[in-house]
Image 1 (tube, rainbow, N blue to C red):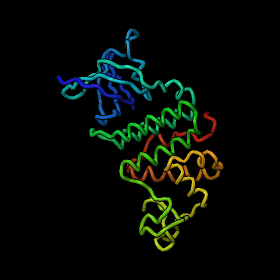
Image 2: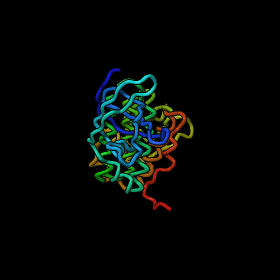
Image 3: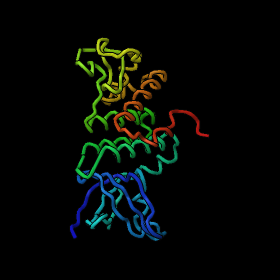
Image 4: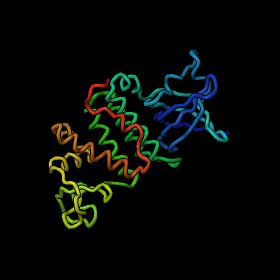
Length: 245
């Protein structure tokens, strides 16, 4: 059977039998892959800890009839422990991997892989607030998938901005002529923050006040749920600064 190597992020895992595990991976070159890791739930397993959610590993696999089989795993990025120790980071990371699972398929998507790895690394290092990191990741993942929002020119007619009416169903901000009756308006500073999150302008994003962050998060969540249709189950559990009960 053909053997191949690839770098991969572990998105989720499921138990299989008494000692095995099914692992859903986002790989650098092969897109989304579902594979079996045999014996990893035994205490003597050499690489079970390398195949936990949010981990990044260099894997060797061989192609099976229904599921590929992981035969080797070497750690590239050990982000899981740092993420699960922080409630806000953990809920944000779950939303990220669920999004990656939804927007990628079997075909390769190196951009999605690199974006997710960078976001998980940032979460583990506490480089920015977890909510900001998540919102930036969601906007950029959707943009790569073909649903890039517009936060400058009108998303419907292209009229140059700035505009402050936002309609997620139309793709972002819209001009007064294109805005349907009752379309919500947001503060110009919030529009700027959304643009910064999409562009990865962290100097501007980190300096944004909590009021603008909260409004931007609501828009990002609505935009994400609209385009993913069935919505993200994990997004409702995301902690945005509240103390977990």
